[in-house]
Picture 1 (cartoon, rainbow, N blue to C red):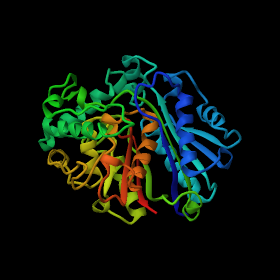
Picture 2 (cartoon, one colour):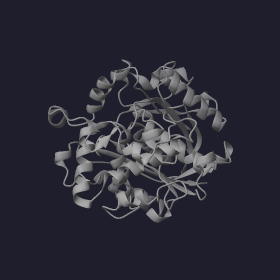
Picture 3 (cartoon, rainbow, N blue to C red):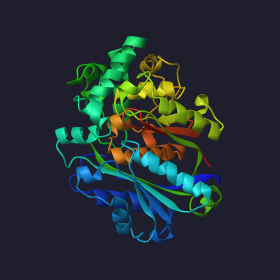
Picture 4 (tube, rainbow, N blue to C red):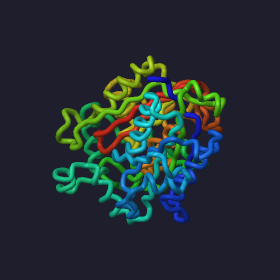
Length: 386
């Protein structure tokens, strides 16, 4: 497999974007990525789109050619990927595979979701479709309920506390307040996080990610051609996608994501690095407990110690292992189909040294972890400065 680089990135703001539809958001992100790479649409050879539930949220099917045509890329192979909240992470994985295999040289990967067109109960119902319809959903379980079970079990097994969960929320809100493209630019205190509106015990509103609209796009090229388009290309050092059972009751231990552990092992091996070599990470904090579990599964800390690690400040921007300097899904926003590619954009911004107030001092190697459902899909990507 030949080395692959990210040569262009583009994102919309994340938030409740009432004046934009699903196509206009995807086009905005794509045009920004093209401009960043100094490319014309006619130069793109393939388009991969991550989108979880466009047909349910906005009624539009056949989204990949719908958006590719609007971007001026009609005629290229245009394919939509669906893997729940890991949809665009999966699209990115397959695009890297295609460029690495030599099928294409210039590929655009997009991710988009328009969620605020539906009521909150309807959004919850649509998202629940990424769970086990015949079991969990039939029993009335939503994703807040499922991750509340994970949190409760983690508390029981390892002594994790509400303060540890709240520390994740406080940190990510603080980071999001410094991100001009974030959905939620609101600093919160530990007291506010602990006393938020209950959602699913022990999770409060401050433990749960946002219902957001947004889009992100990146452009890939072979590493040996990256210099033709940019002096700030970022190399894909390692990448892996894995899967696991969809339903929680089919997992041996719900306090770990086996797919994340497996994907991390493969990505680390491909990159020739380990957890200690990662300078910063964008983790899939759909709920605060998810960031804690992922930090353990990725080897940043020992099993059961993710909570104390977060509470210690180690994951803050100036800490030992900065996590979610973008604000994460918790504050940056979680337009589910855009999240995976959005994480890649956030890493590239850091690796380029363009993160402003959120800039990590040493940002040479970054990791993105994108989760689908309650751990049924995982994509782990490791990027490095070229």
